[in-house]
Length: 144
Image (tube, rainbow, N blue to C red; front, side, top):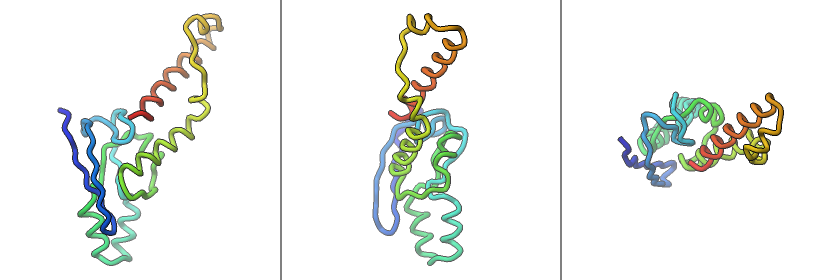
């Protein structure tokens, strides 16, 4: 079910091509986690504003030459918000920066061996194991 999706993004005549392999129906374009929502590559608030006050040609060029939505997980959609970037790749970079900033403390956490974890008390063991699982998930998302 994996296919190559070919994206052409353009704004103000600048053409950008992107190629990506992922199962669109199930994975977030930005991090690879299960997608539960859709991200508007050009935020809807910007499209509505341009449609209302700008030259219709600008609006038409933005809509016709650019992919408008991509599958997205809830957290990525929330972190990106209504920020505008010229391309999907720029949106992806922006999101990765936001993820790194949000989980900065967790990403600096050392990796514990099972022996070291077993020396801790029960609640601390649970906290360390859960933190390590979350850290691994975040690292996978950042590498996507």
